[in-house]
Image 1 (tube, rainbow, N blue to C red):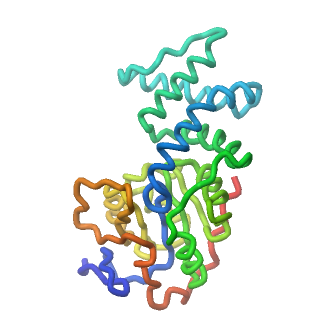
Image 2: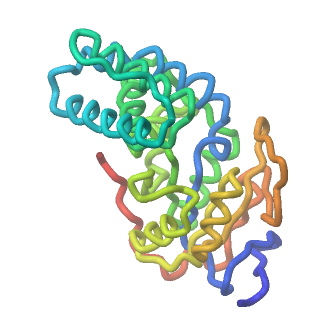
Image 3: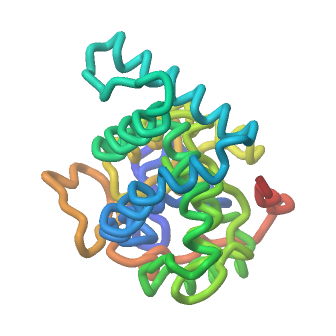
Length: 274
């Protein structure tokens, strides 16, 4: 393995000096303040769970959501996590609501929870109740990277729907035209190196060609183990016990375009329309 190779002055760990062809971004604490997720989105979902489930009670989608929640509840019971009891009969929905609130309180990285939250947030974004703040350097960087021919993608524990809604309804407008692809926990855990290998396969790229930027060291470690280049994003409001060995940035302005970034690129990956 070679020593870390510099990217126009920034030391980025990589097995080989391969030019960056795609940039993969975390959301919470990287493009968007952590406070928005925990102080706005989570409480909004928590408040509107019952309204959503009752309004869509007869749909196949909601029946599947509830079935998936019941399965997750069974797993929690089996692992003795002591979740709220699910009750049969007229109070079934209320008990489901209590369980979902319990999951939210624990910030559970649950695919079914993230799916439900995304559906609830959609109504808030559509009616204007929700508008996503992003750090000021994000939109210019996305435009700069795309203009240079780099692919730009998102990997978040939030559902693909939630990601698309957030970037479609930011305080500076719709940014989805600057994002080529989205990945969520259906690909795998963000702290599992295989997830990053799967993303590289989906993009038809080597992991070394992808730069992953996140504020979570466990995610950066997994991406680095998979072979990706990595940067730790240090933002206002982020708290670190230690930043470890990760090369750091405080703004996307500190990520210069790699030499030859626009050379030899494949067609950008189409956005997921789901």
